[in-house]
Length: 195
Image 1 (cartoon, rainbow, N blue to C red):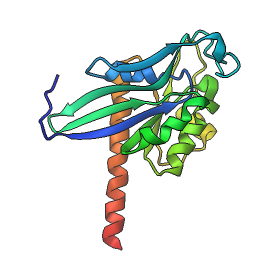
Image 2: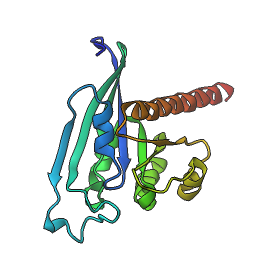
Image 3: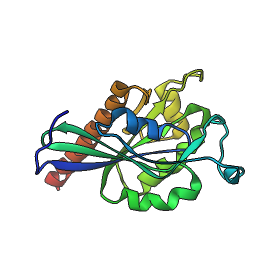
């Protein structure tokens, strides 16, 4: 593990998407520290409230946030905040999004509509994001172009296939997000210089 400098830059990244899409797993697969998880057991009270269609085997849910950390180098640390996925916890998203540099929206092709709210949230707030299509075992595979078309995201928004259980796959999604943010920042700086 790289030991960060005392004056290292800390960047906040959100991990969002629908219920059961893999946000907790993503944070856990890449965090260099034991992630903070606020998972609780699903109970009979959530029946009819939480839509478990497509994730019927899910037994827990995040009720506040997931938190992890990854040190890129001595000068740069990423703090990862996984958002809760159910509608009833969306009131927390505004607070979690404060100060976020960017976001990863996880998508599940079995329940693609479950990530629409996250995409809308970041588009409305001009928060740069990428879409990570979490490829679950035994599900039909779609191409990136098919998913992009179904989600109707702007052509410049990166969409990539991933398996959030695999550290290298998760690192690729994070790297793509950072490159996307740098690209947008570079375009904005060039536009400001031309004005």
